[in-house]
Length: 262
Length: 340
Image 1 (cartoon, rainbow over the protein chains, first blue to last red):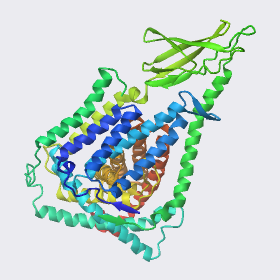
Image 2: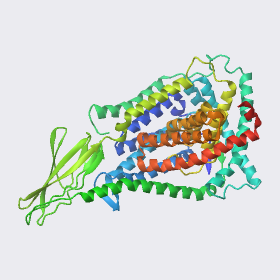
Image 3: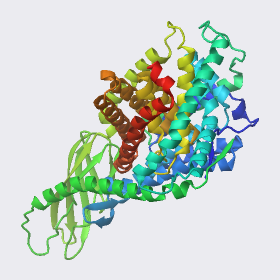
Image 4: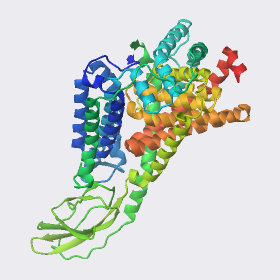
């Protein structure tokens, strides 16, 4: 199994150039839009729109497939289990004992699955096209305190390191004869303690060294610190923000002012 | 950066299937409770009809209970007559207006909460007719029922974050804490990803990430537990491509770490306090996910229950390992015990 510790792909498309704050806003606005839409058709159109954006951002197929894998499992689960718990509507298609499978319930399950698909795919617009450095900077500029921003930055920096540390500790313990494939859930999880203890000790040592490095660079000397890189909203960023805003407002207007089904 | 693991699938298969069977069992038991009660009620219902030969018999179908905004399809196909029914008329009052629908099974969208008694009138070729009634109960959907609570919860969360994360008055958190929070958060995310088992289908994985969250809470207290749990698990969600879960995870796992950290350190970390802390922290996590999935993501009761069963197993395993870790790490790294 292959995993990615960073979904970001280098590129030079308009989504890569967009201000990260606009992309964060787009994720929020499009997520709200997915909640506003109730008709399956419109949700499918939204999903198609999101994937069009991803296509324009030259998203790597392999990464998209990796990210979508978990979402597809959830969507399938919703669509399959929904009709068993929702017995309202006609016609009844199958009736097994106390369980009635009705046609509207199946459609409601599919609609909810499509909505979850939209909610998941929206994040790829941000994650595939924004570097971690820009992401943290955008969060700090949007009001997150710098020290917590730094915590997030440290997290993202050390995440791949710890994934490989855990990997090599696992290999080392396997070489000493520890088995991860045998036994029940409890025994197998207990065996992981032999991996987690060295991993945590190594993490705590790293933290000690890191804290010395932070002190030696005068971290926290001034709370009103300045930044080498600043974010500037350009005309294109405002246009994009307006478009994403309009995408949310239009269906709301259609529903509440003209009572159109959306 | 690519990270490869080998043998992951082989490692997890047997207990994944067992957990799946347990979860499905829980779902079936829970699902059968409401159905058997409604069945018993419908048996108790009886109908009396006085009809001559050749008269049609109307059947408006069973009563329906739906949530607002649902298209209700009436079903008159149970009606019978020896010659043939020529007219089906459905009459009811909706929004103070008389609604009349024709056809054997027309559809109508109910957007207003209430109980509607719908009359079905059938007429056969010789002009005889018969009537039957069906009751449609329209209830608020879950979001409409609980939106006030969700709003209050959202405001409380925003207020806590304001106090917790963006107060400008205080100086920065000490470099030692920043380094420790950052590193433990990264470790939480890494353990979540590395001990990753595709089990709990809504989130997409079963993992030992909770054990590091509980360890952070037990070893360093409420704030470390909250930050490592919330940030670390949310980062893992985002990096694994389940970003839509991140806000929910931030609250669920953040409260898990914070609550277990706060309670387990009472009475100088006695065994009872540790067990209570892990149980209450775990309950916060399972409940937050369940409520969030049901009301916000609207995944349906089936998927939400399935997920809650998976999360409970995760808390039990993660909690016991977390408690074990807090002892073992102190032995392996005595500096930690000195600091406490």
